[in-house]
Length: 397
Image 1 (cartoon, helix red, strand yellow):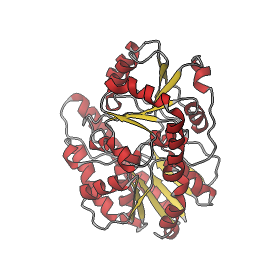
Image 2: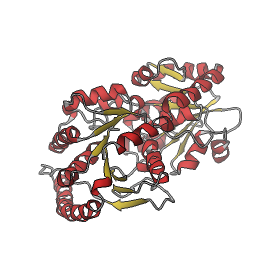
Image 3: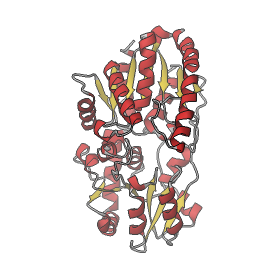
Image 4: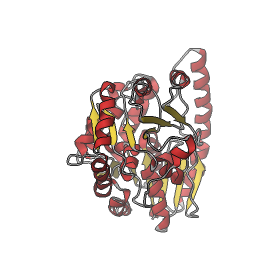
């Protein structure tokens, strides 16, 4: 088997499922070609395996309809790249046709699925669609969004396998795309079990945090759709023993930059240095409580029902569980609905309840932490799902 991955996002290094999938396939002797755009603000995905090859690849958007100056510039940029697209397709087709009979395409998210479908029609190579983000028709308002959604629906119906984080998102996806009896496989967005995670002093040493203070961490994107403003306002009124560390490597918008500049409370620390896998684990292992915050703003296709129903598509949640870090979420029922029977943290109604939630977890910390690790080992770990996924992918040939 050979794997061709169409990944339209530049942040593959932040997706633990993809990172471990590539590494395990390569370790099993499977050649992997990854087609993705430039890395932007993210660290590139590193691997020493000679089985993995990276190809800089542009994913074209449908032409935009706009008559304002900024829109015309954006349209011109995409028009130019659409002219280049046939040439990069020709090169790629020539490459993958050499091994067509032994190749499986892995399509990541809607744009990746649209691109994989183009190659499937020309080569007959089967593809598996990994849906980490769900686009909903009633949230598509621009010509570009509407067109992408229509193309993605068509692509999803041609996929030989659909891989989603949990059954609830699988049902939503099937309803949204009009799929019946589609072959689906569920696996959470999660890291592998190894290496063993032991408590570290990473954040305490880096930011000189006293040993008596409890470190609360928020990782990943920090925007309005992750309750950025509410979190900063809340943290200023937490009990003195708690300190908030916000680790983000995505570029904040104007509103969030103002929050960062104004969020100079003594107990709020911003960490913006990108970290590789090993350092990221080391950093998390030095935290005590994790925050899983998603606030549907409906400002973009990915910021509405997609995050309202995030469920097991939250990579940060799985990382916290692996490290035994109890979590606090705000109105995020979709995670708990998937994981009944595990007391891994608290889901509160609003930020007014945050101080009490922090104290409640601290009082029974050992119980919460043990259940978090148990949850990861029994339900989330990538290793639990890889053997069956590998079998499903090989079955597509």
